[in-house]
Length: 294
Image (cartoon, rainbow, N blue to C red; front, side):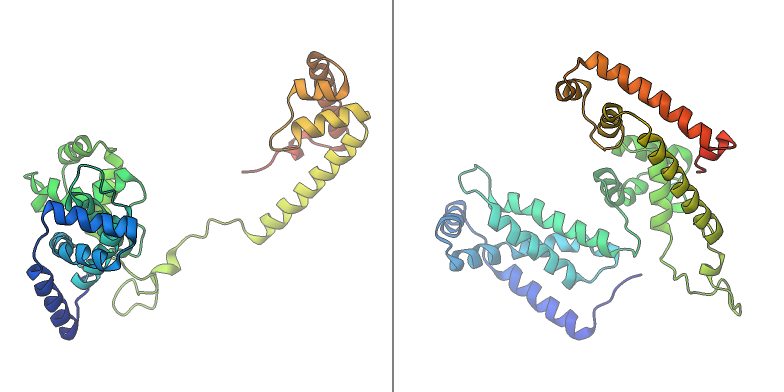
């Protein structure tokens, strides 16, 4: 859905744009001088002059993102944030113009804003998805079948190869960009009392399954604790240190601790596991009771 500024905001935006475009450009030496004064002397006047000179770059970049239906003023504000970030990080010693360096930060700030606000659903999280989101329209325009509706399989393969992404990613992004956001509280049809959310399946286990699962897990934990108590002290140490912690001790570490070789630790561990298995099986009527349903 397009976001339209009110008339007062539009007038303020136009005033800002005109002022920004009237600020004279900086020469390379003046630009470097301002950047040095800000970076090394924290001269705020130099910072303001440097930023004002390149506000036109923010306006120019913002105009390229207007087709995403977001307010021009918001795009400019986000671009100004990127411009300030560029000024904070710019190193005058590098042989590069500030405008070139700032362009990346401005564009990145606007892209992040578009991705956050274009849809209530998170649109792009990886670099590949972001590239697909911002280039799909351009590539579709080069495909003869795109204007008539959805792309053909050949068209999707073309986009996939151009952007080095999977065809399934292209299909998913095409669907998301062609459909508008809808509220789950909206009715499925005019005159209907049913909402879309009424037809969403709840995939969580029902209360009976949850309670039964928790009871079974507690029972299995009790069996294991009782079986471990039947092991010798040395076997208990090995099982607890090797099997019951996230980053278990190595055979060599336990060997040094117990005063035996690591091969002996391995033998003791194997014997202890066999004892545990036999002890737990003695406690159950059906070995299937030990299985955890997924």
